[in-house]
Length: 188
Image (cartoon, rainbow, N blue to C red; front, side, top):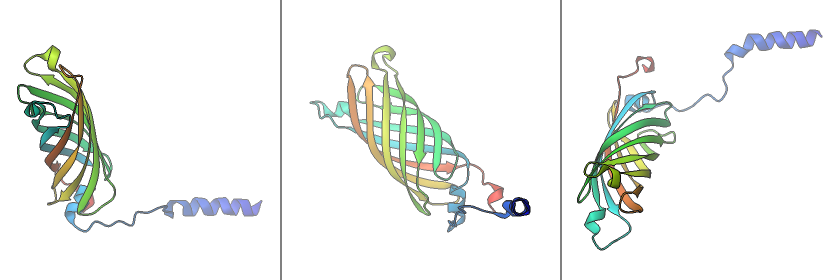
């Protein structure tokens, strides 16, 4: 019985000092350290979509977009946000509102990432007939340039349904700037 009590006392004394699976990653620079911090993230992006179904009037199925995602970085690997923007098609302007999630592995200065988004696109000309829903999957690279700013380059598939066409698929290329909020003083 004494051995069990002695073992329990030793566990209670030394338990606060134990550390399991301590991360051995050390950021190379203050920019990387700030990139790993939790906080508000703002990602304005410009993009171009090229239609992949190759109809007779191909220019009708291309678009240019400007979007902004405002979200929160929960860990150094996961960002979740909401987005809004504008897409300019040949004959119409669509205003997307969507949810966005981005995940990336542990990395230092150049960080690959996966992004997924989905939402609605509201048409400015004929709301009832031209509005759509969409989903998008992207793969990209984020380059940490300064303490608060990263450059994002990504490409992927963009599928929308509704309106006059039942479904349209696009290859999308995007260039963005990721801006982090105020620097966390706890990281110094």
